[in-house]
Image 1 (tube, one colour):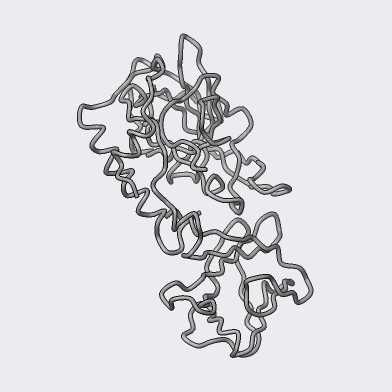
Image 2: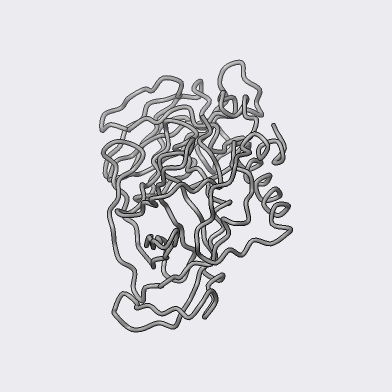
Length: 314
């Protein structure tokens, strides 16, 4: 997935709240954590404001097998075993990716399951040439879709920042983690009805509050980064949220004498993983109706409110 005005301080002020009691795991917030978080979230908002960032989605069209026109898109589009075809005339003024000239004839492009990429751009009649619309080809659950990214989208033009909870160092935790020796395949739903996502569970982490431990599973690729998708009952947040975690933040013996088992049952030394829940993000589906984001794996539900990170943006 691609991520792309108030200052971060304004956002935090708008999201100020009375902090909920902290989880009973090890809190590792530092005095300069708020400043680092503000700089990080400023970059997050800058990314969202990019000309073809997540604030620019205006449509999602599923491509049929017969040539079809879509409102607001030049040319005719259809899908078959080769990929997605675009037929256009010079007057359509649509430029395939990798070309400098408008298409005259038929062009075909493909994308792997679960992936996406920009396949064409065009400038709507009367629009500034700097405001070219991008057509993104996606493939989800065996279906091809066209996602329109328009820099003139109302969500981008009216963007004043993402509302957040105030930074709270009590939500920076070192939590027990167990990395699997081999990933476990799971199928989850998506933000669009009928979609399935094939994900890999690479480990699990324990979040403790009031003496109750909730085990959440981490997804990602073996040896690469990991993500934590979860739901919780916090007020004013999206149905599910995401936290990107750094596997390099795993430490042996930090946070107590811990022990666990890998997926194959082999004992592992005690490890903890740093979870800065202040950096919990909305997924793209929270900004428009056209995201295809995966849902959390079954059971990734916290029974308490995580009043940290981003709030629902709309």
